[in-house]
Structures are given as C-alpha cells and as structure tokens.
Image 1 (spheres, rainbow, N blue to C red):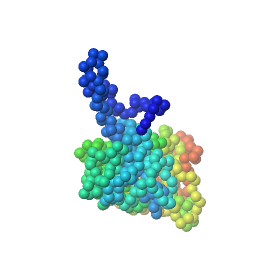
Image 2: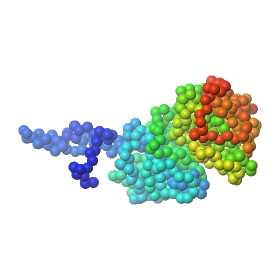
Image 3: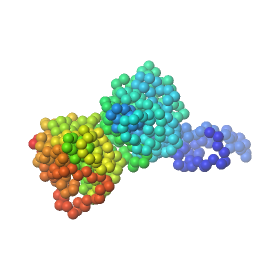
Image 4: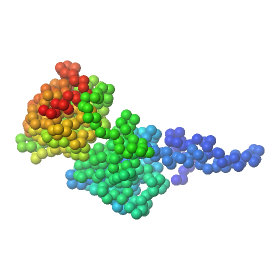
Length: 489
C-alpha cells in the first residue's frame, strides 16, 4: 500500500500489542563498531512486534451462524454470521477474513475481508451474507458479503487475511489448526470441526446456531459450545456483553469441554436481588392471535418492568411449552435483544400469526415465530444461557433457579407459580397480570385475570407501580420457588 507524507497519521498507541520500541533494536548491536556509530541495523521486527499477528485476534469467535436466510419459513431474509470479542483486549478485524466451505468441501478463495476497525471486548459484529425473499430484514449489518451458507451443513472459519485457508477442510486434507482463528463445522457430515463433534444444524429456518452464554463459551468443541435457538442477530451498536459475569465461560485451553449449565434441582435457592433484570415480569400472554373471531392477528407475550431500576433484556429469553408438555431448548424460544427497559415500561413480543382474523398489533418491539395455544400453556422468562429443556410436564417440573418469571395459563397447566394456574384464555381473552403488570405475589391464580387482550409496547406511557397495591415477592427467589412445588397441582 503506497503512502506518502500527505497520508493521514497512524496512531500506534491505539493498536493492541504493537510491541515496545526497545525490543526491535536488539539485533542492531552489530553497528556499535563505529564511534559515531551508525546505530546499526534496527534488526528484526523485534520480540514485541513478532507476536502482533496472534494477539490482535485473541478472543475473536464466531458467536452465531444463521444459514437459512430467505428460505421458506425463514425469520430473516439473509444468511448471517455474528462475530464476538470474548477477550479482554480490542481485536483488529482488518487482519481477519471470514471463509465458508460446504460440509465436505475445501476452503477456496471465496472469502470476505473484514473492515479495518477495532472490535472492543464484549462487542458483537454482524456480517450479512447471501439472501432470498422470505423473512424480515436484518438489523443494520456491520459488513456485507455474498457468501451463501448451506442450511443443513457446512463450515465457517475465521483466518488471518495474510494466510487465508485454501485447498483444505476436507476429511482427507483438514486445515492446520495454527491457521485457524475460529472454526464452526455444523451438520452431521461436516468434514472438519473443533473438538469432539460438530455443531447441531438447525432443523428449520426458524432457528440458528448460537455459541452458548452470549458467545462467551469457548472450549474448542463445536458440539458442546453451540446450541440451536431462535435467531438473534446482533451488531456493533449493541451494548457490550460482559463475559466475566457469565457463569463458566470456559477458556480456550480448558480440559473440561462441558459448560455447567444444568439447573439446580432445588427451586428456592437463588434470589435475583441486584441483577440487571430485577423487576421484569410477564405481564400478558395471548395465544389466540388470528384464530376464528380473534381480537388480534398474532399471538403475543408482553413483558413489563415493575421494578425501580432500568432492566437490561440482553441475556434473557422467552420460552413456551404446551399445557402438559415439556420445554425445549431448541424450539419455541425467542432470545431477547440488547434493550434497556425502564421502570414502568412494557416490551411487546409479537409471535405467530393465525388464519388472519383480528386487528394488527401495535408496533412490536421484537418479532418471533412461537405458536401458542389459545386456551392454555406455559410461558417462562429465563436466562438465555440456561434454557429450560425436558422439564415442565407432570412429574418433571422445571427448577426455578434460572427462571425470572413463569406463567402457567389455563386450568390444566402442569406447572405454574403458587397455588394454581390462571383461568383459561381464548381468542378474545388473554392472561393479564393485575395492576397493569405491577402485582406479583408469585401466584399465577391470584396475580392474573383474563379480560380482553391489551397489547402495549415500549412507546406506551410508563405505569407507576408505587401507586398500585403491588404486593411483594415471596422472597424465595426471583420467580417464586413456591411455583415449582405448586405445579404438582
């Protein structure tokens, strides 16, 4: 790259690990022979500079892969990859390329050079790729390419721009580990992957592959580090995600490749006091959207901050299970975005559409695809790194340790908070938390009623819970540990 004196100055102090000046001069000793001494050749790049190519990419990982953009049933119009800096130092993206190869093929010159910018610790970077017509538009992308990802299997890699992967990646000619910054092999036939197994490919266009704990988990094992969940495209404008506050984030060299995300079987151990999501509750559940005679076209879940401090929704998820069924970590889940919900404010999550009856909802704050029952079911607000799975049915109740709030609606719900579930709902009735969302005594039967649906969004004026007889939490945990027991009905 030719540059002259008119070229804008480069500030080396802003670059990570540029290397101390003194190290570079070490091999210049040969010039000491002259009294005025030429200083000698400055020698090699120096011990500090030699490591720069490694350090600038430390912590950079592939956090999410969505390979079904624009396909039938897709949530978003384009494939995308989310990058994440899980490290403690800024990463220089200009030194990195994104590459893709088919499940059994080799990497070629099909790559995307990333822009020359720093990605700060805890920040995301959204790369929009090839697309189609189905779905909604992605949030503003930080980089755009035309690579098309295989929906059922493939390999996505990050490599140095100075040494991109080429002619490797097949079962007989795998790429050398030292040439890879990060690699995700997904689908049952992927010929190269990290660790003991491949990441599970989504079974539908409604899901993507997520690195666990918001991108923080990296044990160099695709099978254990990734899970399938609803797409959550995140870009560089989103607030930083602090991996130091995430349990068991893992380390690159960790011998234990299995993160500890198993819920504690004792329901009333943990209190949510002091966490960023204090006060967030499920304020309304409507599953009759679009049904015959429906009030509104779409199902929806309404969240509400009944607390006194702003709540950060990033790292939380909404999950649904049928009235007698179990929750699944790979379906009926919506991950919440980086959004600060102020006290007294609502957050509207629009879900599946029915046959078309009803009026459109107010502008939703988030769109998902969960289809809920009009009359009964179960909805949970959970931490996204501990999604409920295989629990919620009679005889196998979910632990409340990582549940922020839980609503069993309809008289036959197999799990609920407190003494019983809410009454049945319908195409013209929703389950609404009393007091505008302020009442929370950890008892679904007492806290909810079933009037006409009342969808509200983040633009709705704030409700002052101090003016409402809001009741108090039972003190047994953020979701009321009593609810776990009460589910036996």
